[in-house]
Image: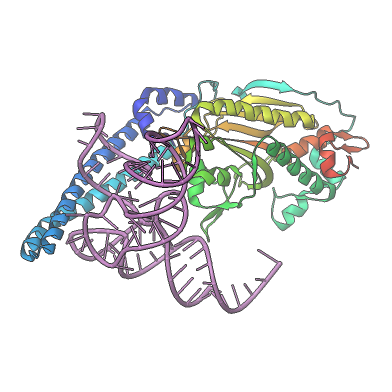
Length: 423
RNA sequence: GGAGAAAUGGCAGAGUGGUCGAAUGCGGCAGUCUUGAAAACUGUUGAGGGUCACACCUCCGGGGGUUCGAAUCCCUCUUUCUCCGCCA
């Protein structure tokens, strides 16, 4: 959520920068500013009314104490109107504030200046590319065929017990999955991230904090009976550790990593591009989250990008990095780098990580602040990234490492799998 | 799931209707003393809104109510603890 103060001070800048997201918000901004003014005016009126009745109450208290009951009762009469007035003003204030918040919730984050113009994923800017695409032998298969051939992932079994998009990993497939999780977590903790295991369901406040709620697309699974949401990513529980916190400046940065399953309804996405592991309702992901000082958040973002690079390099997968254009940027993000691996048998790029700086957007929603040595309080910056999302990495490994003899396990994973080949 | 108790500032912990944003202790910060440090002593130290700055307003788990006035009384929700039941 953008800060009202910021919108007030940088109105034109907000409008022109949001135009990068192909949004025309000048009217909305006017409404916001108008509501904000009304809110403050109402607050001032309410404060004055309350001040007056506080004064009278004290007077009554004094009179009663000194035994002047008659005079006290006389003063009492004066408070009736004030009470009515403050009640009305209070209701109006709540209403205006709610309207303002609702409007602010509809405004996405202001893109960073380096975000390229554009409307779709076609306009994303390739900023880096590395690794070579392996030459596959004749008869190379897509991962869903390989999964069947070696009996390591069972989509039908998952469909039977749950539904489409909930695969069952079997035998060496399950073991490889576990190996990847351990490997990623080790890489992250080696880089200074503290490991967490977190709940896989969150409450509404947490969803609002990261911008996952309001959930207009119905992306999250909702458990109505208990008013909880299945997490779409570990970002939600982990970032919300710090909701309503006032950190000391020296506590920054906070580096966290967590493995969780992720649940996404993905309503309306069907077709060839969602085959196999390409898009699932439940998948595993290891996430990294950072809470940063505003002065260092972009440095941190680049550091996260380098970190993910290092992992892909070790796995020896061909990958590229995209800087997302304004039209493709997610709601809360100011700047996002997507990582894609090349899946050889499908001959397409698969997104396996998304690394973003949210600046103060989430911090403002969740009141995540820090205090410097002089006692000044500021919103912190939040960042996160996948390191990494499992299923597509698995898909790429299966496809890129296939040989006529079987699937070769990447060197770095062998200590974790305990085998070097799936055949 | 049933019965009971509790939730106060960074922490501990007073406060049961009136000048309480809240005693006291610890912690933090600043100073005195000291070559330096510790100890001791002195001062200071919650958050949000609002203002050029004051004033002023709000906040004692969340929400609602009673009252001229609520940390204090009532209702409700959440969480924690104790006991019982169930259970990986």
